[in-house]
Image 1 (spheres, one colour):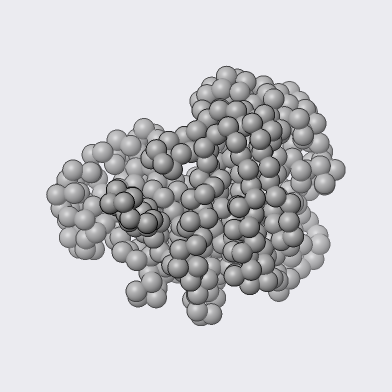
Image 2: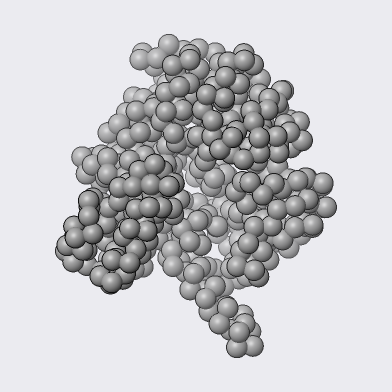
Length: 468
């Protein structure tokens, strides 16, 4: 592929970027901007004024009080901060405004480059029904199901696809508004609740019913497009989840047949090409273990929390690739340029107390020691004395290990977790080591129900006085 410019966008050198996020992703983006010689301004709430990201950025600007609804989620304030500090572009990270089409549109309207896909693309893939239509048009398999406007319609469709079913929000993800119904009675009890949760979380109470795969793996494919060409950067397995929230991710996904892996990659690229996708994106699939089939789940139109495992096996800086596309350049890489080396596994370290039902554990970190070893990467904004506010997501670090084999990567990750020290707060660090040591995870290829079953067995054993 030529190292030229896209004919559809006028290339523009970005000299300064507003990072509209916080925590480890803000630190991670700022470091790449610095390496590229691009200035950085970090938008911070009052709770994050003394954060590591605020000190690493060339400048920090306060955009409001601690609560995200008063700061990180205020589109007009974030845009004004970018314009007022002379930025040409905005990097949204993940979460907050990253998948809000109106934010991307506001940036474009004010002459700011949104470092991500177009507002139209965000809007289309963010609507679950529209995303399903795109998948069907692209020849990508989708799970049996569809939209429902009433409980009667839901019951009729559930009878057709067969129980259990999932009740899902049309306008969002992240587990909000998502309910499993094993019987018609469950569906009757949960239908209105799911709709109300969807309305509260996304401003859209519409839902749809989908067949629930009883033994499924969450496998996703990283794609990169410039608006004309699309390539994939391999796959990841994110099946270790608690209440639909990912905890451990790895790349490549273990124990997939060569044929299925190729088909997953091709399906993801077809989906992205269908909408002339621009920037980084992730196409997520549910792999039916019993039937050895896969189905489209959704597309996330942003950088993912788990992107480091892809970076570790490809050697690419995905934020750098985002920047290149945002400036209007064509992809510098062809599919044949993508080489994968070894295996990488990531653990999300959360400030929470597993012994108390995973209650968040905000507070001040007394000591933060992160190991520095070969084949190891730590993405974090935490240091000695750091404050963890109670207003945001509980994830405070990601520990990523790479090895020539999966076994080597897991060994390095366990050694790193054994050395890591975070005092003054509770974390899920020890829990991660227990999960890594289970025969099921060590063998590879667990399904999305694995962690829930394991936690339930662990609690039952503890109540009975048996070993965990």
